[in-house]
Image (cartoon, rainbow, N blue to C red; front, side):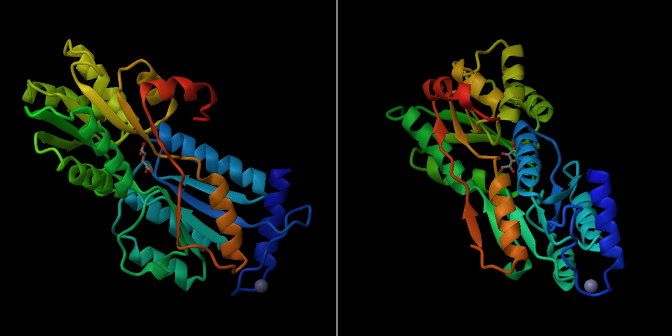
Length: 322
Ligand code: GZL
Ligand code: ZN
């Protein structure tokens, strides 16, 4: 079925006259909206859950999804966007791996008359006409929520609390904003001190490697703030290998609330997780249809997300989708 549909699609597209793009009709005559999605990569549990949500929502919405995985490289995402422009897709969506360097390729999409939707991560471009909407979390708030928990956790303690921070991908919106939100919030307690802050690139492997080095450099670490569960899980392996108890000798606060993170939380190896929802698929498809139909859409759509303690993780785990 799908091969025939694609052949029909190609036929319609090729037979169409140059210029404007027409709605290519699928074999069943239904208008076939084609969405090009340039994904960051498959670096974490969050990312794979995000990809699954997008693919399932496209299927459920009758939208033809053209999907690329950039292996966390900006040049691959830019190449993918250029390829979607050449294919004359109806709409392009992507999760920018880093905040800057997008203006040129997004101006090319605009010149081709193809609307763009940002999901998950933001860009720092001054020209907000380069995209129709940004659907994703408030990462500064996520950092604040992690900081608020820590301030409460150490209420009343005046002796120094040494914190190490595993940052997400350098230059990415979640890394920049989770760092900023956390740092500004812990100012409320001057004894909370970040003694080291390094990127673990959102992956387990890198999180473990960097935590091994931090444990050697800093004999007295009281807290780990990890910008995602995957780095926290890697760090847990390093902490255990160093003969320390994660969640006890070194308290851990993390972000995402993916299944493996929530499992570690329910076992008190992580102490607190700030949720960051990857389930953006349905909202993205709804946005894509509105944008292609020329309907107005909100410039900023926030995801709904919460926080979890070990008790709440135990209760939530059975029905977690990712
Ligand atoms: C956040 C997302 C981040 C996740 C990481 O919305 O961009 O990237 O927190 C993922 O797990 O790798
Ligand atoms: Zn035409």
